[in-house]
Image (cartoon, each protein chain N blue to C red):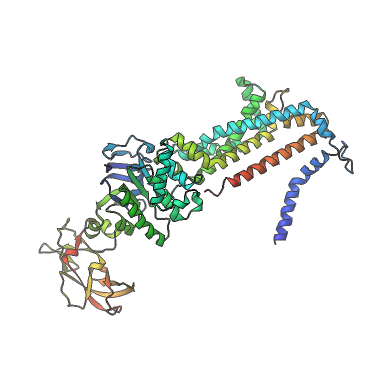
Length: 258
Length: 349
């Protein structure tokens, strides 16, 4: 049975990884036509180094993803605290209302944002992209941080209070360290939501200032070059290293802390 | 002086009264138990003293100072939670130091105080451990040391022993009592375990459905319960519902029953008798103030004593007879149940 389980899991992972792996391999093929056998070369990475447009787009994407992670976590954590630590009329309704934005198609959210930003004078550009990404990431942050908050209940904060800690001291000395894994997970999720995002970025970015997915899409429309494979490979390596690093840190910080 | 005085405390959750006009005084330095079943309001009362619950009505003073407007962190109390609520990210030392640290005490004072507290609960070697590396009993002691470290005016304990197994629980009861005596801090202790309340506390308040039923020293509560609930919740009791007799006495199913204490309601008297205060005799034999005929229905041998369930003239009776070597009475044996007027306790419903 364990052999079967191993084979099955292997197939699932193959399903996930084969297209990605193929693209990564082709990034090292000198032939732009995917000719076999592979003629190993780093020429597309060299070409990428000379491609200012893709580089700028990568920097834009990273900056926006980091900003989204920071802003969404900073806004979402107090919201999660309010939902899970205070009792007030309409609390359940507010909590339920957090979820529908997750299921509304991005195309529709993007259209709505475009109209709204145009109408209010916010306009388009990286600032509009950032606002849009934060709005997309917020529900995830509130849910992820909230899950962590429900796991340890209000007793630790009460214990801090009765020991003389002011609410601010209790928050920074007890709540934040205890929910730190949740904060990291939420920030990572917000980062991923932003870094992956195409539709809303496409709608809200101005032509000169693109994020990486938008730049890749534009490049493909103009004509595919294996530089796209090269930049995608770099992105994949970056994402995997980031995720592995975080999951390792998470384990060390003790997720068994209840 | 850190007596805790609660007067007229009322708290409502939805339509349910969690506290209904509760007034109780916890004397300075006493070990005070709040005893009641779940839903009796005992935990709400403790949380009101802690400052986690703001009652709808009533006032609380601690050491003469009204604390109603003070948030929990300014009341100067210590508390041990049912789940201990130790900070999982801090070592034992830092947990115990927390209360002094947030008050900005100098480091040398904190170190010294933590050392003394860990010695008090005999956990000096565990200072660098994290809470999850400790057993339940050790965690409990850390929680106690942490609560006592800042020198609280009052120590609050919320069913602190309920998560421990029976043997450890008994050891911790002794430990708790020793520490409370040593420190001399006024202690309020919430429990649903009547034995724990009787053995630990020097005063007990019994609560039922948000109301204070009776308050006093354990012995007085056990020997002189005023209400039916106090008589049956604290220990076992035979309840005899009688009617007023012609001579001003009480009759139970036609048999006269005498009580020393005056009846609160002579028209519908209700009497409680503890099972261990009753004895069994052959029909017509023995001498006592009170006598009811009965038939043995079942016996439960418990080593030190035998518990008999009997069919009496007014319903079942329970009698506990000490094992002094007599043979156990067979089911169906006709006997007389005897007891004295002194042990007949008139109670109100």
